[in-house]
Length: 289
Image 1 (cartoon, one colour):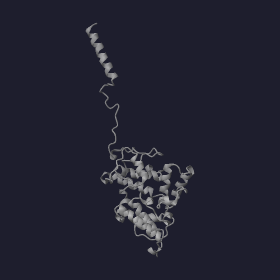
Image 2 (cartoon, helix red, strand yellow; image 1 turned 45 degrees about the horizontal axis):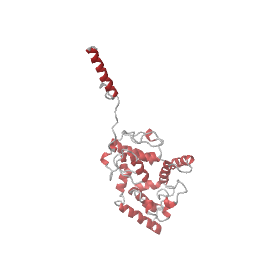
Image 3 (cartoon, rainbow, N blue to C red; image 1 turned 120 degrees about the vertical axis):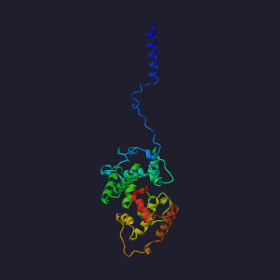
């Protein structure tokens, strides 16, 4: 066999072995890119998180438009807003938010949020989302409730349960399942629960913001006027709230006083009640949930 032909066969065999082992020419190194795993919440891509009922992303690294927000449920809007905080390590007290984000591979909860990780776009987007959440009229909220009950009369879908909970709080009246005992209802979702002595179970997953609203709900049910712009806005949306110019704390019942004391004790455990400035900062969307 000629030497030239032997060299040709040897070269062919080597090439065959290389290809069999997965070898490829070096000319196209980007032909099969490998996505790097997300190491931190900040590294999560804009489309990393989406709801089960929507293909639209929950996080955007650009300014939001009205089209990004229109048609979203309260649950989706809450997830959009809190995804921004989750990416900065914010821990969540509310069980449904905590459960949702702990299921995301990129979420790394910290002891407290690192606000330095929130960009100016993030802060502007949180404001836009929050304005959308708070911009629904009573008629719109009731229509959203009716749409859920029409398709899920039993209220068995987990997402619908969360949505009805959020609608109840926004309306200030219970629109969830009537089979849920009043003693098991969040008193912000059903203020009539305040007719009875509250339990720790009813308030132990509330944030300081929620506790401030709850404490003042007790006063508001008796017509107390508020100097706080935040509280004025919050209670003005509640159909049951009627301001009494001659209000005094003498209107409070013994149950009211015990419930106020219980709420205050929980606030103290969390670092004390929010001041108006702190609440405004949170309502200014620098805090989650």
